[in-house]
Length: 293
Image (spheres, one colour):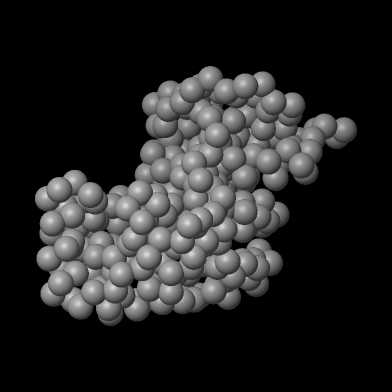
C-alpha cells in the first residue's frame, strides 16, 4: 500500500492488450509504480515490473497494492479476484456491453458469453464489499484505435484484402464505437472513486451512427479507400453464405442480424461519475494497423 513519500502501486492484468497498453502508459505518466501481468516476457520499462502469468491460476499474489486493474477477460479475472487476498485495494475491471446484447442471441455460444459475463459481474459484486473495496466495472461498446480489435479492424483488414466490403441495404442498426484512449482515461478516473461495493458503467463512444455509416467511415479512412457494396437482403444473404463456405469470413447468422439492430447505450452515468467525454468517430488508417510486437 502507499506509504508517505512513495508513489501508489497498481497491479495491472492484461497490460499487453489493446486497452491495457494505454492504461499502463497513463499510470506511468501519473507516477504510479505498476506490476504488469503478461503471458510473455516483456522488455524492461521504467516504473514497471513485469510478472509472467496466466489468469486465473498462475497470476500471482494480489496483496500490497493500492489498485488492481483488469483489462483482460472479466470471467478469468473474477475467478482470480474471488479467491485471492487483495485487502481493500480499489478495483477497476473491464467487462463488455455484450452482457446486455448477447443474452437473447440466437447463437448458443453468444448466450454463453453473456452468461459468463453476468456471473463474473456477480462475483465482483459479492467479493468487493466483503473486503471493504471500491470496485468499478466498465462496459465498452465497439472498441477501436489500437489495431487489435476483432470488429472494426477486422472489417478494415477484409476490405484492404479484397478492395471492397459488402453490407445489406438495411444495415442501419445504431452503433457507438469507442476509442481505446477514452477507455483508458475512464479506467484511471475510476481509481478516484471511493466507498465499498460495485459500480457499473456502460462506456459508449461519443457519436451514435448507423452501422452502414460506421463501416463507410472505416473504408474512407483507408488508402486507397475500398468500395462499399450495398446489396438487397436476399442477395446479401447468399453472398454471406458463399463467403462462409469459401472461408472468406466466419461471421454467423446472429452477427449478421445484429447489423440491423440498435445497440446504443447511455454515457450519462459515466459522464457524471468519471468525467467521461468520449470523442466522435473520426478514424484514420493507422487506427486499424496491427500494433508493433
